[in-house]
Image (cartoon, rainbow, N blue to C red):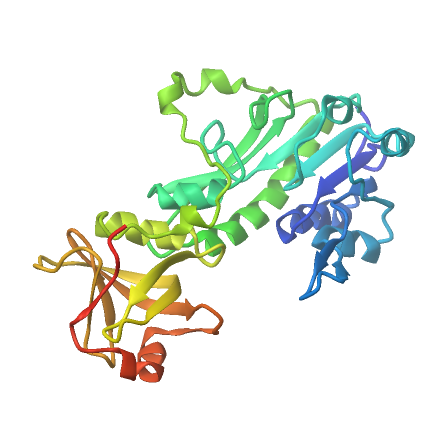
Length: 330
């Protein structure tokens, strides 16, 4: 097999999560002959400003040839991709590829996925692993095939999920672990050490597969009728993005839409209905669950900045009547 200076690599990715892997390849002197990323995204109030993806920004800083196809089956794009004559393609946080793309290089195309496949196939593996209260997660490299996230596994790295981790902290850990695994996977391919394992041999039975579907706004709405631990995991699994949310009805009848970023779980028997706010109006803001309370620590009111719950109470004291606030049961 070729050495790393001769192996022609095409890298595909878009967000910061992918930049770390691309950087590891470039700084490791691997031969990245081209980068493919999403077209620039319209941003701003009038969608009039085009924002380059983090991967594009890095590729330009390193003078790496770049393609930004609207459609991955465009004849012009396929012609440009073939011209790079890649031996291997690497995909990190990009999009689903058609067979004509992933099957192009002789060495195949491998993907970096932020879960311990075959668990948590899908768009939001980090979020769902935490929401489901998993004690560990990890990163996987696998060869692409027809169905998304189902190809043969090349290598995996496990990391623990602690009680205080959220989607942001696990994202960053997996981003760095993933970059190292991408480099290791390339080295293993170069040294003919790869022995891919079919995912079907690792878990049997559809009922044993945990999915990681795309998360929408309504997915993030908190159900206060669940147990404290479930709600606590739900909130941290969506923090800092896209963020769990709820509607708080004050004693004045005003409805406040809040995103919750940091909370504390309190196990305590009580007689409050699930969804009732218990507060002294100054120092703490708790929400009753079926078996305890969720103490709000860091929140954001719609249209306002993130702040501590105590700062929120200080600025909204007129709306609060001690121990007499409630949330609608969902």
